[in-house]
Each structure stands twice: as C-alpha cells, then as structure tokens.
Amino acid sequence: MLVTKPNRDADFRCLASSCPDTCCAGWEIVVDEESAARFRAMEGELGERMRAALITVDGEAQLRRREDGRCVLLNENNLCDLHAACGEGALCRTCRLHPRFVADYGARREVMPGLSCPAWIETYLLDEERVTFITEETGDPIGYTDIDAALFFKLYRARAQAIEMLQDRSLTIAERLHRLLTLAAELDSEREEDCSPNGILPAYRKKLALLEILTLQWRELLRQKGGTPYPEAELAPLLEKVLVYDVFRFFLRGVYDGRALPWAKYAVFHALVLRRLSRHCASKKEICEVIRLYSKEIEHNAENQEALHRTLCRRSGRWSMTGLLKAMDE
Image 1 (spheres, rainbow, N blue to C red):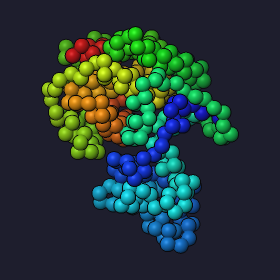
Image 2: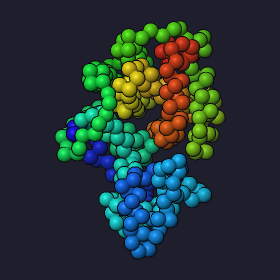
Image 3: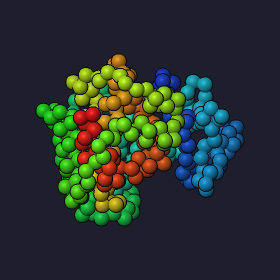
Image 4: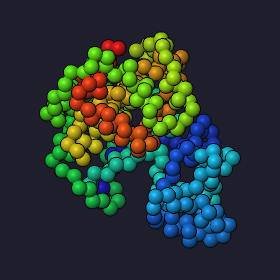
C-alpha cells in the first residue's frame, strides 16, 4: 500500500499531560471489534476495568465516559491508564491513530493529523515553509474500495495542481480562493446560478450555531459580532495552511459522488469563516485556537460535517460558488 503523509508528520509529538486539551474527552470513542475482544479477554484488575469500560451503542463498542465527558481510562494527569500500563500497541484503533485522520482509496492510504490537536497546530500551522507530502510503500494489506479509478486519478491530479496553486504566495488569498473554486467547477463541468444579494457571511453564524455544539468556547465565539479585521499579511500564512489541509483531506471525497466543487467550497467556507472570526483575535495564538475549535466542532462530528457539506452542495443562492466569491469582498 502507498501511504501519503504531510512532511511534518514525522515531527509530531503528543504533548501528553502538558496538553491544554485532551483528545480523550468530549466525543465518542469507538472501539474496533478486534480491540474489543482483546479488552474483554484481558486478565487481572486492568482486565476488569476494561470490561467495565466497554459499552455498546447502536451496535458498536465504545469506551464509557464520565458525566464530564472524559473517558473512564483517563486519569487526573490527562494520561491514559491503559497506555501507561501496556503501551501504545494495546490501544484500540481509534486511540492509536488519533489525532490522525486516515482515508483509504484502494491501494492508496492518506494520513493527516487533525487541526483539533494543539501539538499538530504547533508543528504544522506555525511552520512557515510550504507543505510537501511524502509517499512511502508499506506492507499493509490493500483494502477493497469500490471507486472509479479514472475519476480518482483525475481528482488526484487536480488536487496536486490546487495544492501547488494555494501555496503560490504571489497571489492574494482571495485570488487563490477564486482559482480553487474555478478549478473545481471546471472539473465538474458545473455552472451555478447567481447568489442572493447578501452573500454567505450574514448567515454563516446562524448555520454554524444550528449545528451540534461541543464546547462553550465555540458557542461564545459565534455570538461575538463586530471586531477589527486582522492584518491580512499575518493572517494569510495561516489561511494558506488551512486551505492546503482541507484540500488534501477532503478533495478526493468527490470520487464518491462525482463532485469536487462542494469540497472546494468546504475549504473556501472554512477560510472565510476563520477570516471573519479572526476579527476577535489579538494574536496568532488566538487565531490558532479558533482554528483548533473549528476542527474540533466540525471535523470530529460526522453529523455536523455532513450537514455543512449538504448545504455547500447547493447550486444556487447564498451558498453557491458565486455566493462564496461575493463573500470574499464582505
């Protein structure tokens, strides 16, 4: 199998007990069948804890959470007792991979750590160098994925072109967003109708507020209005990294429905929202926290991501391609 990762993946190091957040609280931790069977067969006191920690929700095994949302295996130092006792290899697939997202396309696997992780924010987002990707061949078995190979490689080539363009610093962010949308629209041979007079920005807060909200910080951020535009020269490098991240992670999903444009719009919407929310930030550190919260609220909630994607599939009105283009000037 060919595995592609960002070049900085090898530099990623978990902050462990020093992390200002924890990936072991706030969301469901799904346990794969192999790990669940292994947990149930463990002996001794730890085995009893593991069996007590396992629950079944909608037919799938999960790790139990306390009332405050923390995994029952997470101790007061924000460390996992299973990891401490048995090592990383003892973890279930979800915990072993986190914060990395993994996508398989036949003989190809793509890996990208999530922007919800403070350690990855430091490693990836604050790196001033352009992002490159490394592909290595591994001995992992090739999974079966029912995709159109011709469409996949068409999207694959277009994505490489898009990532190169998004890191062309002779272009403004607005120019890069315009070119990304145009590339995807041409790829889909799609023409969208004119947008409503108001564009998307008057509606983005309402749309995001209607999704399931995980943290109080995100709710409070969406309630803030006004603010002063953050200097574009300082904001642009962060938006560039976010755009490359989104295009790498999501653009190839167009292979499943034959449409790349909604995923290009997803990246553009993300950038526009961050630019608007940065009005309430006084430093890059605060902007990075907004980026982290967006990832935690949207990327790690399948229902939220699907709801936003459905909205961006619309071909007319404020959520159309032209609606997004208009929002660049708002």
